[in-house]
Image 1 (cartoon, helix red, strand yellow):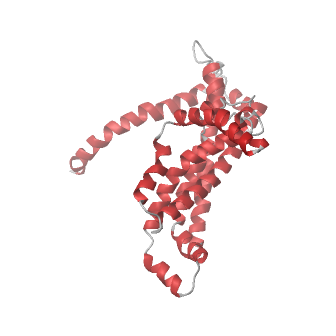
Image 2 (tube, rainbow, N blue to C red):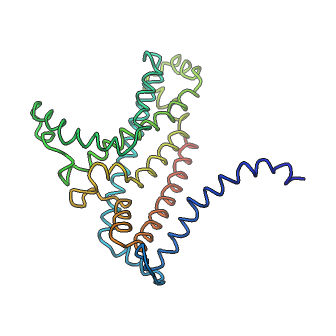
Image 3 (tube, rainbow, N blue to C red):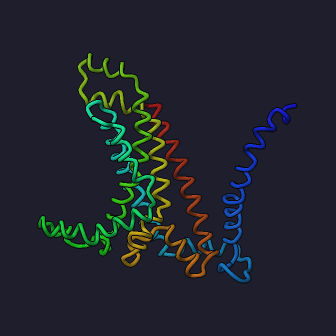
Length: 289
C-alpha cells in the first residue's frame, strides 16, 4: 500500500535519478577507477595502484596551482560577499528609485556566458583600460594587466567578482526583505545609528544567508575555469593556472588522463572538506549572533 501511494512520486523522480547517475555518479566513479591506472585517454591501460596519488603530492606544478587557486578563492569570496551585501543593502533601501530595474541590471552578469564575459573584459583590459591609464597619468593602468604575471590575477578576480556578486546580492536581498521593519523602528527609538542597526539587527538576522553565500562563493572560486580560460589561458607563463585548468590541460591535451583524474578526485575531496568545515564554523557563528 505504501509503495502504491508513493508510485506517482517515484515515477516523477526516477528520470532525474537516472540522468543524475548517468551524467554525474557514473563519470565520477569511472574517473576514480581511472585514477588507479595509467590510462592516457585512449588505448590500453594497466592498474598502477596509488602511484598517481603519490606523484600528485610530489608535483611542484600542482602545488603552485593549488596555491594560486586558494589565493584566488579566498580573495574572490571576500569581495563577492562585500559587493553583494553592499548592493543588496542599497537596493533594499526605500531611497532608491526604480529598484526592480536596478535589480535586473545587477543580475544580468550572472546569466551571461562566462566565456563571453571573459572575452569582453579581455578586450577591455588590453585596449580600453590602458588608454584610460595614459589619459589619467596612472602608470600602473597604462598597460594590459593580463599581460604581466604579477597583475594578471587581479583581472581574473575583477571579472569573477563582477559576475558572481549578482547571485550573492539576490540571496542577501531575500534575507533583508525577511527582517521585520518593527525591529528597525525599535532600534531608532533607542537612539541607534545606521551602523548600529546593521551590526545589531541586520547582520545577525541575515547570518544564515551569509553562510550560504560564503560557502557557495568559495566552492565556485575553487573550481574556477571559464574566467581564466577566456582571459589568460592560465598565463602569462603559469601565473594564473588554477587546478581546474591544470586538470584540463594535463588530462585532455597532454595525455595524462589517469594522473589528472587523481588530481581531480583530490580537488573534489578538498572542496568537500573545506565546504563542510566552513559550513560548521559559520553555523556556530550564527548561534553566537
